[in-house]
Image (cartoon, rainbow, N blue to C red):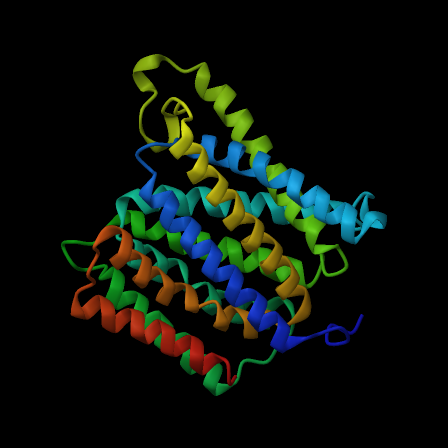
Length: 299
């Protein structure tokens, strides 16, 4: 199959930018509410709110798509990879400045470029390798692995980046013909299943061990909590639909570069919501990562 046949790069770039904006805002809200919600509660309730909307959109736009996905196995693998990716990233958020977590996570365009070469046979030019090297140096500046303030939680966003990059390669290759709404539905179903099964398992643990972002009790839901959950559902709706659609319409190496915009959004939300003012070295590292993304657009 010709992967370029149905490409629409300008539209894909706009869509992925909007998706990144929504996801970055949703992730900032996750960090903001991390002391209120246990992660599995977010997974289950957020997706239960999003799923009826997705089914309605599918019914109104593509009723013929109410079938088993043509790539059910790969759709399932993609969904589970993204669920694990978000678990790792959300575990890091309460323990890192948002801008630092975002910068570590948005090494993902580097992995997307590398994986595109390995799995899609896309040629990486000297410009592409230069972008990868610059982005890597930016990450080193931010994480400072030899510095006393190095936080091991910063490794979790790196792990998340690898998983996301692999999932987007699957979207481009094995899941290219799957309706993007179906991909979003599959992801949210995976959130509900994994969140519910984990919550059931945790409920059987001794009470003394039930603490923290992973093992705590579910929060009672008032008006403010439901408002937060509705906003998180809206963010995952826009983000999951946008990413699925965009990566079907343009090369991962191009869109992965555009996704560096997340880092810029994260700095804005970090200042606005958490009064996080990055130091000069961190800002330099973030700037290098963003520059790497812009350079890689030319590769």
